Length: 76
Image 1 (tube, rainbow, N blue to C red):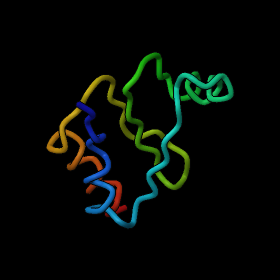
Image 2: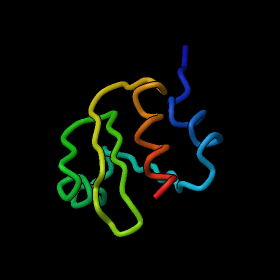
Image 3: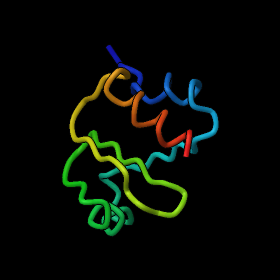
């Protein structure tokens, strides 16, 4: 059984936010992981338009957990 990432549904809900995915297993993404403080996956980092990391979550998250932070980011 394959599960769809929770952000896929949120992507349709928060259309003003750019959702960017990267594969943590790919070596070329190592520097980005270090900069964001990401040490495992799945991980989610919200980054404001000015480049500030506003939130970071590690491990599987629910839409209800991510939604308030996405709404705040969208309303900036």
